[in-house]
Length: 502
Ligand code: AHR
Image (cartoon, rainbow, N blue to C red; front, top):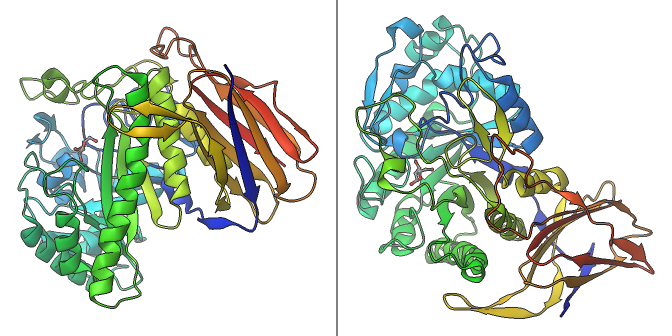
């Protein structure tokens, strides 16, 4: 049987301009993300700063626009002062979040130098676990104040005469989670977020963007009530609410796994509704935007030994998820959902960048390679310029136990209003070939196919490894053609498909 899907698109029906910050990732002091990931002095590709060039090159190829730093659960026990100044004076600490030893040889200034080289915008975070507004204001003064004060002059004395001008700040991390160092109730956290945001804006009034912690996942018992209470307290002081989601395939059922993607859309719509309810209570026109600052597939490297290694090691192998082909399909589907919510999701971070649940893997002292999930992310970032179109999609559905009937086809299209170029990202969740038919007449005159690729393998469990780094790579889809104002193509069963029309 061949499935059928029809898409109608018009350049006049636009969801919103896409904020390219949704192609963010995350670097946490966790396992081998920093040490042995982006930073490995002595590695054969390391530059004078100790940054691995192979990882930097792959970060650029991935199309990352923003990187969140320094955590994560690590953040809630972090003293930013430990990571600045002469390296031989930096203290070695116990990291309680990941039971590791942190020698602080990499910190704020090293990250900012790396971010510049990687051509990414920083998304920083202040510790609202063990610490609070006082440290947050000092940290911000250190980073953003031009000079003439204790902390700004301290930065200068550390070799950074110019302020870093970091605009985006997360106010803590997953503060509702019992696993968090110094977790809080919504009432406690809302007040601290409110006061921290207030003093941060007094330190830097140039238009900081501040994100309050939402629930650490949609399954939390306080979900939605947490967001309401937190925002009801700090609504005036913040711009964003943060969301986190990790997809799982615990039952090893591809239909259930692919159906999980739809939960992301519910999650976004629910948090928009809660945020707007807080606005309604105030009769406020202000709209809180969404920062989906942790998302990915993560369930395999989730055993106790993947989360903690005895003996307080430095940079142990933690959360080293090996991604297979079906994981890439879910990551592609999630990207489609994030893009189709471009009116409210303005920043997002695939968690994380390298080694730790990352699209890039390295061997410490050795090679770096692309995991399967690298490809849908790189595709979306490469084509993700312009306005997301409001598509009319006609598709068949399939049944799932946990998610009900879900559509076989997920798609997003983005049009560059300056060039007229259109990018189309399509996930076939069906287990048969699909005949795709896109009416291109509403998109402008004479569009032609610049490229058409597919990611497909009959083996859903196939992964890219150090030995076989190219087991899963995109290939050309020769069936794609545009005739009579229609793009038609055959999509393979369970496949990720990318069309560039110019
Ligand atoms: O990304 C891994 C961890 O997942 C982060 O440290 C934490 O915020 C989340 O629970």
